Length: 312
View (cartoon, one colour):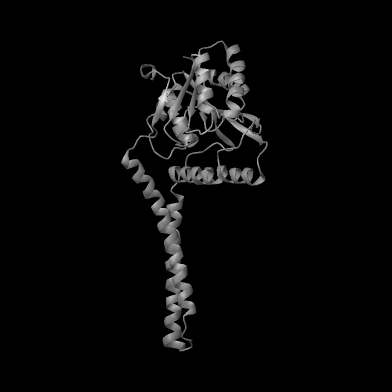
């Protein structure tokens, strides 16, 4: 198998057939062996029914159906686990990642690059808030991590079998695929493209999911929040010590003070707020450690048409 295309799907019934047709138009001229792996991430619409129908028409349409919604990053991981290609393309199912870019990605991979990611020049059909927060997040993550992460790039890319096999050795629960690929290293390059808006339907990526993904990325590849908690603790302790000296000076030297609760309450609330923030940051890291220690499976497959013996 030369090329595998992994497609996470969540309530994309309006886009599945169009995506398949465009993939067929793109893949057939390449004249290579390929497979299309649709990962149904707990869709509640007719996505799975349509994918099954496509698999009956085309034996190289594979599908994995999860027992529930596990999230896009886990769905991509499941597809990578089952992919057999010498190279694997990761492609969203909403047609915002244009399949027509696959030949260019494949050509760059053939030149010796282990990873070729697609970098967005523009993002059509998205609100100013979403574009500005995404831009801020990518640049913040690049600055606070030791691993340089590509900016303005999602999961749309082609990766080699070598990278896939390495990813399969990284079973952490909080998946951040693009960060893992950047951490792995190997020769990487990019192609720029204008990202179109969704073909049909609504995005399944709510702001809460985006925040969760951002937290996964930050806590997986940076210790800066923990360092900030430590530094803020020292700063607050220093301020508290100075306030204590001033209080003692006013009480015993100048004897110029007014008994009251205002300063006491301000100090207590300020110190308590910093302590709670610090405990919350530490708790976030401990929670992630706990989930990895449990060693639960990343996902549960309800059904699939991929033979077990074909899995590398």
